[in-house]
Amino acid sequence: MKKYVLIISSVVLLLFIFMGYKLLSTNQENNVPTVKTQTLTRNFNIGAFLKNSNDVVKEFPYDKYIASGDYQTYSFLRNDIDQLSNKLKDNSTAQSVIYEALTNSLIKGKPALIGSEIDSLIVTFQWADKFRIYAEADSINSNLYSAVNEFWMSKLTDRLVAISSENSNIVNNFKFRYLITKCNEVKYSASINNNSISKFIQNLLNSNWTHLFRQTWNQASKLQLSLLFIIGFITIISYSLLIKSIIKLIKK
Image (cartoon, rainbow, N blue to C red; front, side):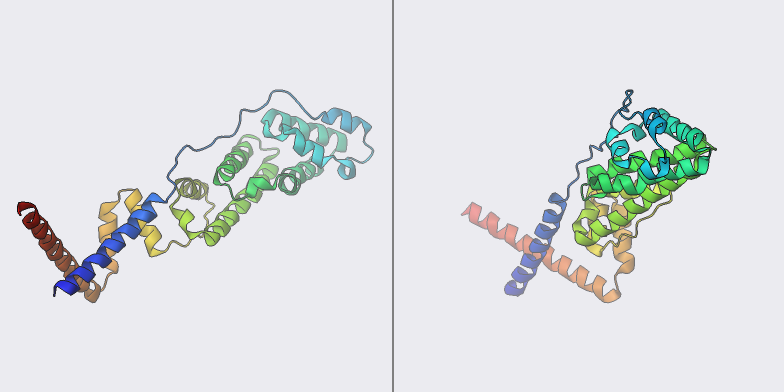
């Protein structure tokens, strides 16, 4: 009997050690990064380009525009759209040029925006989410802003799914869960599959004891619950015997 008690106690102890390792190895750093303060100095002279260009659409210097970082400041971005519209006499074409700059050209020039670093992805989200607000404030260019926002949010959620597939443990990372939550808030959900262990750890990290107990109880069969009670009873008895043995040794 003592042999079986010792075996079960050892298994339970190993289980606790495993769960402890999972909890300790989960990155819970919660210092969320933010977008850098917008610059007030222009780095790209779009007026000079438009003055010397014979074919704006074909000659637009996407690389230089992206490198300048001017697109991160709303007033600069709005000014660029207006100047392009005046030159082209067509707001739709002007929006198309800016859309290309802020989507395909930007992701080509700065692939780290949709890389594997969670901090970078959070900053990308914060920047992309601004276009949702721009769309509400600027009815003339709302289609452009909405399209840019949708492009980046789709890229972000796809990247989050890919990262979770490559590393299932990352779903317990605070910043990863933070970003998933922020995406859900703006109606862009990422289909992340949480296994039972990940859900258990997340409930532990959130101290959601009531939910944890309820889910464990509801999902377990009668046989599983019976085995759980038996293992728990034997574990208590085994540790009681162990404590008594230690006390006896101390008294001797």
